[in-house]
Image (cartoon, rainbow, N blue to C red; front, side):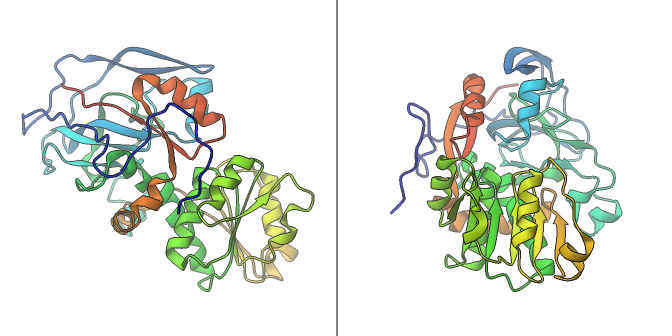
Length: 374
């Protein structure tokens, strides 16, 4: 039985398969896409929490590019900076959508559903040849971070960083393949490089990435794996507990005294104090994997690294070739993974979506929109 967790009222929520499905609007032209009205409206992030819908120039797709109609985009903590500081592009980097047009030299059919990989990798550098597309040495773009992303009606993406998904996966649920599943599973893989015998885990931060690590750890190592997870939010701790996590109130004195000596710790908070505390409790041969961007951490080489043979690792996003295995996991565990999504808003309530997300009592918040003709 699913444990009830607090949820905001009167919001759209993803239902069971087939309920509330977004209808596809696909332009019949199978060849080159042309956006006839170049100035289409899109959300402009003006800073200080102001989002205005104004004309936005969308070009036609070029060689090797696809024109995607975003149908769902999950909000991310990275978007906080755009919300408060403004942006010169349309943000949104956890996008699921439908191909509505193609440029020359592509093979993806119009009507294909899929997700957009954040990093528009080159495919030819040393990293890409090894499959480390998250470490591309010559990226063409960062979708939704520096280039137009999924909060608008159109997104131009290279065919190589568009991953198709089948019709049995709802597009809001498909966004889980990105930051929640992809980033989290990659971090677990990084930990396994130096600690293949993981029997216990500690996670600092029960936001969406922390919940993702918890969920993916249970899928990878089994439901019986003890996973302690800390946060300052009672709501988030209750939410984490509903996924099998052992909640740790980070505001309590000696909060980590009950955690023991975990084999691996993951920092999903980006806070120096959390990273330092994690280093202090991991066991011999343990690893600290830093997943959240943010602050620094200072180590004592002798005491923190050499004597206990600890490792401190970074984990940046994930590799494109990890999407296939995660899609199978999503199919097999759709009910539990889709529960990470706690709120869904229509795109014309994007400002309300951000206010709710930044309020701190949510899992993933997803913005959905109908298909746009071009």
